[in-house]
Length: 173
Image (spheres, rainbow, N blue to C red):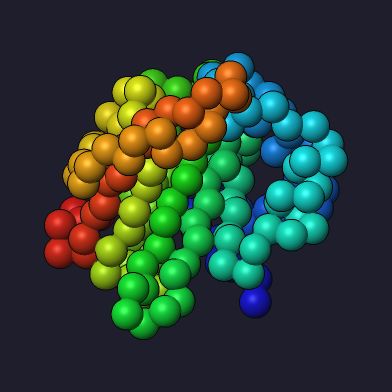
């Protein structure tokens, strides 16, 4: 099933398609994105976004006034005992600091709460990624705790992650 296009004003979340591979690569090669996501090439984009993206991974391009500003994705935990969705987002530098990230997160959260019937959303930025954390807090996500040595960074060392969540009754979207 093709995910729906989501739109609010001049902001559109459009499901990715194979012709978007070059745009995705440009997003992931933006220095402010690559710092957190690591290095990507054409093969890695093809593998992670098109060949084996995972059954529960849904990826959208963030489009503002017709320009690609980043990507946002979600994955769902289908087990009824633990059902929730996790979100991840990347916004290129030229669109950072303009409120695009929080708007895109809010739009996707609204879809996940109302259309996908989730009661809880999670996000897990690097604990040192203050810009991302501020964007998530602006939408209402709360810190749950630090996950020590959570992920290996592009520099090869382990870095802490911050687990954040948002409950449907806390969402003001």
